[in-house]
Length: 297
Length: 273
Image 1 (cartoon, chains in turn red, cyan):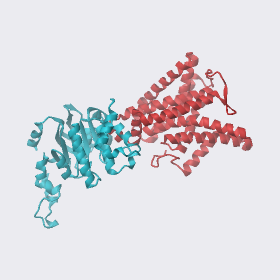
Image 2 (image 1 turned 120 degrees about the vertical axis):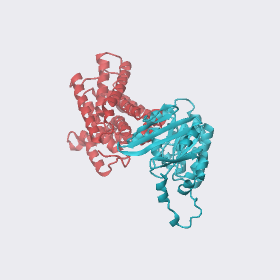
Image 3 (image 1 turned 135 degrees about the vertical axis):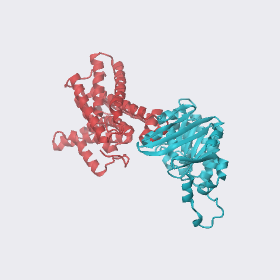
Image 4 (image 1 turned 180 degrees about the vertical axis):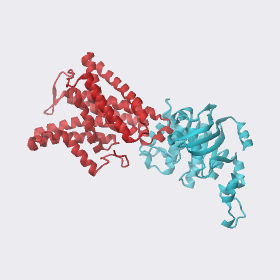
């Protein structure tokens, strides 16, 4: 058995897992505060990554200008999307809202392919060194950065929900909208803020993954992979999203390991999370940290 | 009823409700012409049996009616001279009216401090910390509770709900049955704190209660509602001596009554409206 490969894959799994965790957190944020199941989460990554790519390559802006501009763009994008598309859907049956987000997902896929073409495009290199050596392991600098970015986002989320005025308002809205309104919280603002934050943070993750793998429509696949993550963690738990992300990330890479060592099926890596999804739904439908009474879709 | 309203109007009233009708789901008429006045700085109580429309009246003021598909279809609600009928609930809070909903309704998965800070959501000044200390001064036992608010006892949750209202620095608090589910001793404690807050902070209160005895001793003026209308109103001292009040809402009254056969309240209730 190849222990070195196993260790390397587990570390890869943890790094990818934190990114899954971040995207899942964005998904949970929207679900928790607005009760919308967002099938277009992956497209947020896609749009964010392409926007940043366009800023850096087309407009030739330096990274430290183009990247913040991307985030500002995504914030406005999130708010506009919520106000124009999702706000009129408040009070409609849950299945209609889901259909709308699936529609959005397809629309953005098409739009992005139309504008930027269907080929993978590489990000300009941001880092001078290819990889760093930590404890005898070669880890790519971009991976290192992705890990640090993810951890910073998670810590920022923690402080945001614990101490900020809007964070508390979001938790109150998630707990009970009527109570939130009785406290003077404008639920409309909370909804818009949830979409804005979700879009910005997803874009961040999109840019990070784009740097490693290049930018292409494949990025939006993360949006689908978020489902095993949030089902495992519990649809409405931020902590669950992080734990679920790590578990699915590692699971994926372990599947890759078993596949390459013994099974030779070729693509177990991609399918394993969805096997896990089915099994979790059968034995623990609310996930590890989910609330028991939430609605199933 | 007309003369009573005049009596109140001699004082400046901060909230006046004029002949409002409330309809739920476009068809169910719940309030059928309610008028009432709340003078600035006073405690006014709204009494009546279950289903009379007391809570609906409060929700019509606070705008929370909207969250339950209700609507004020006639009449007007004025707060400090401005119309607030069918305002959004968050706009009403920003104007200075804060409702403490029935059944406490604290946010159970947050701590006491977080609940209190949410009470101050509409404020942007730097005195929020001071006000948290002020709330702990009124409710010392809340200070020792550091866990999730859902684990507090019923009385403590009610105290937290009232404290949260104080945090908003409102001009008026609408209290919906603060005595619900509390032991008699706790009810006394909560009511004396309500009076203290009213006197020390100068916050006007509109108090909905089932515990008529307690409410009438706490408030200065009272309204009695029955099936969507005001049946009776007057200064609390008068209401406490009113024979009908004694019979229906304050235990006792009718000293000559020997057995239940003499209790013809269902008939009298009909005549009353």
